[in-house]
Length: 165
Image (tube, rainbow, N blue to C red; front, side, top):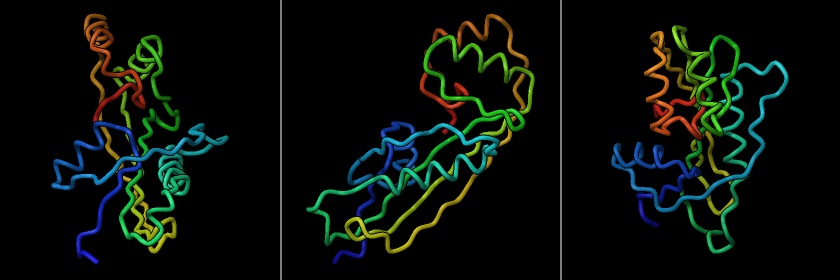
């Protein structure tokens, strides 16, 4: 067995793949998990990010051909919040505009949950989850700045309409 185990990225996010590559890690493969990402009633943003990263890892099942192979699986989820108010992933320009309005001039926190599992096939040998919190102060955005960001389409599909991985 090779001392360098393959890394499977449990995310279709091009930003996450690029982040791994920046650290010198080339994912051997990319798999995704289809999970319900809705927050539970009164769930804090940090708990949501942790739960989603772990749920994605649990939901990913490798094919039978991997039954005896060891590898690392990395999953992650990012949650953006103003206070305890979670800002959903922007599905369209309207969502991006609402997110920008909510964050403009306010303190924003971005919670990233990351789960790393060492596996043999679908058997978890070891698992660890960590949360990283990034705090930022949003400047008060002008109407022109909001329009330019909307036109860039960078916020669609991103938590809090932010692409800050």
